[in-house]
Length: 316
Image 1: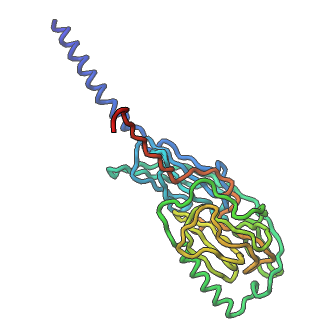
Image 2 (image 1 turned 90 degrees about the vertical axis):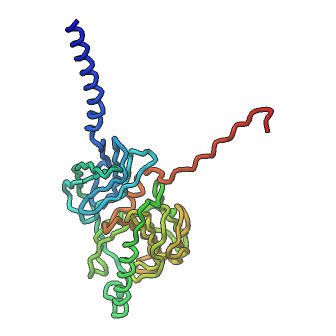
């Protein structure tokens, strides 16, 4: 009888320990389950779409990559967070740390670090002939260039915490791009210039559309860029549209993907009519063609239809 009671006590004690240990084991499960990115192979100039999958809900997720802060947003899946960023054109090929921090509603932080390899992209060279004042500007032009720099700096400091874009970015014009991003060009055999965007050769007067939804933070004529529009897509991510013959939007205006921004032209430093598209994240210049190649999720949830109320027959 004594042995039976002792055995029962032991089994009861074991059962209690098991019930207590199960939640403790669950709590030891890492808060950050997985970190991934698109494309898998990053180069200098690549746009990077980072994802974080969690095991538990978080109040916020942040990160750091290439010395810049990442701002993540929650996807339609509560435990998956995203951030759209990139690798500057001048980044040296190497392995770089991507650090992610997830903070729960109690203020407890979980951290993980992944190594991201950046390889070298291949950029071309070329010679370009432009009006002499765009190579050796006069004093009046120098003052305008300086004033333009202040305007652009102010535009790129604009910050929207939530992403304005949704789904894939689209081509801004009905034309194919040239392999012009990153090209080192010799202007009039005098001045070396690095091309930090992608050109779309197209006749003057063609419609230019917003590559994705955003807010207009600059819409005016600049010395080098000609008539220029800059869109803020949220979280320090911008697209630029240059050399327009006409601007159809104004600063502060919210535009939708595909909405007309203006018409193509040949204003500013150009050799002929075309659209120059630029992409910026923080201070980094990114390849627009690599942005257009990404498959991105919808960031704005589609409102669900209200459920129909059922009525019983014979009632009012």
